[in-house]
Image 1 (cartoon, rainbow, N blue to C red):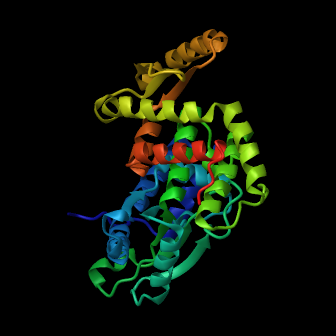
Image 2: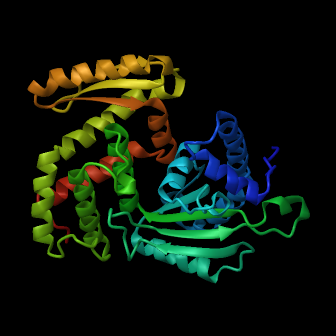
Image 3: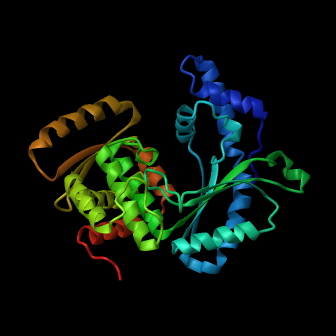
Length: 351
């Protein structure tokens, strides 16, 4: 396999990052910026593969109980991050290449972190983000380890210093993240970036604390420390959002649409969901039919307001595909999360 090598200097990469999100840049400059950024992104494949193999070796003792995956950050996600972080230099973005291990329990995550601390691996540890014991306000948990790629081989010297992020999560934390991504995909909200419907953001923050109680971790700041109070608020929000029915319907829809996502040529799905049953219907639209898709969605959205339990969404096929790639077990993960929500709102405290 021929690995992509960086064709541009770090300063050219940084300039391309600026041009990529500059609304005043000319179409020619934007096109050149995308060429440079795509090359820089693809060049992370080789160091990412090296760090991913090291991660697999580190968690090998867990056998099939550990799920390892890797991904290159999508161009749209790179753009979004550059827009949010105005002073970020693209050449220093640490998660263009990322690999992840999902482990059975939170204690296992801490054990793997200790293994990395003791490791004599060649790669340079740069930063650690401990969202396990200090969760984000959104409720996100996990540990992120950032490494700079190192090599003694001159054949691979062009990759030296490239940054790769390793994410470590427990199964419950991963199920939470999958549910956030799933709701965000169907609602068109950037929930994982703490943007979107306040009720959903609060719901996921509360559920993160509920799962933390199970795993013996600190609560999310701003959520009730008392579990009874936590569950009362959680039950109220779950009812307001119809959260269980929606999550189950989204899971059914993803399962039904998977074949079309893999094999179809559509750019948009206009989906009708019956939250009270198994009914899922959809129409597919090409990229050129975007305006038609929006009109159809708006018409149905207006019409179904009189029918409780009905929902319509307009989803980009690329977003569903990205969800499938990032969370290959999303059916199982969503089921796990829904089961935890049901336990919480029914008040079934674990022994």
